[in-house]
Image (tube, rainbow, N blue to C red; front, side):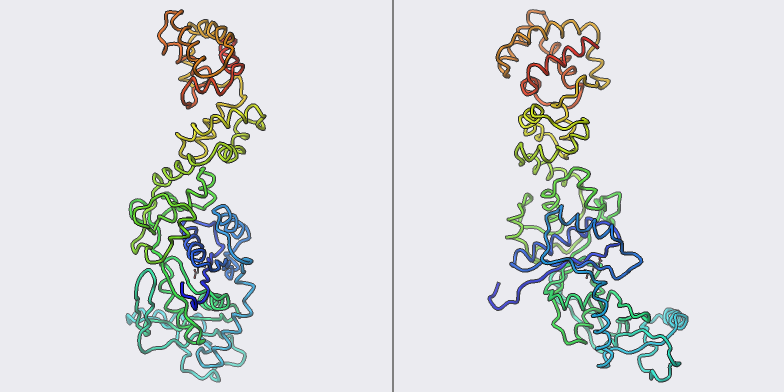
Length: 471
Ligand code: GLU
């Protein structure tokens, strides 16, 4: 960064008409990383100008989603609606300078003009009053304020992702800035807010690229500095089609519910459209150090649940026992129907790291962790019930007696006790281990059996064996 370069300011500007979806979350992440990389500010603006479609629960979902993802913003979130007075002021300033004009056309007249333009294969420009004298309008008639778009020449945006993109000015319409009811349009509000908030880089989905040309003209008309634009290709489904719900176009909270960790989600979203050589696992510190706009891909990235699962598995394995426990605690307590007691916590701290080796999402871990909780008598899967046929139960009873005599409850000793028991009974080791596993796990996924018994403890193990005999 050059010393005289102004401080970088980015923003995320969601419309609160629904949850924070995955595309929005990625846009927010890129803006956050860009600002953090440059030691700048990352601002949050809620674009709630559309009063009919904006809702309070949607605002909450956005703030919650950002917080969950760890994307902290600088200062307070700005409400666009609260700035309507300022938007109006700018529209009037443009009017006073002849950069905008009053349009008295009725909706019917505009529709007719739109229809005619379509029939003639021309662009509809909405410019019915561009060259008319407002004095011709009836007394007190309602009017909107429209921008007087340049007709000659071209506008080129040096997009930081798309490269130079040019449009002929004759293609741009005299869009409305202020509606006849005095409310600002998005096209006006977004420019005024970005200007007033000192935004230097606008990083957003490329569905806004066409808007950028029109917004550019508002900056130009006001003589304002034009920010840098970076339009990121949208996210597609694995089949290359536009992302739909089926593909994973869900709210961030749905990913939280599915059991993904925020750090895995950040890593995944980062790589979904940006790369750093062939690095796949990128910590947040590395992401801040490395993030740039040059390596944002130009073609749409494809959403891939398998990759997300793999990354999540990686981040799960990286957690220590304590963090694993706090990640599963509330779901686990709900699952088993009681708060964890100290003996359960102790077992879980011992068991979770190896359980995490096989888990992809938190619910997998919750399920396997429940095995180490006090939930006697365990319910059995059909498979476990089959392995606990009547004739094997006396064997389990004798094994329980044997295990009771074990004085040092640790893997080597437990294993030796089971082996000598099998030998004395004239049974293959597997013939003993299978029903033990069924009785002790109820058929739930579990790791090494002897290790499981060791963690469960002597009393709990024997209790689970005896529960089957008593059943
Ligand atoms: N509010 C717009 C949206 O949610 C974004 C506007 C912008 O980033 O310029 O699509």
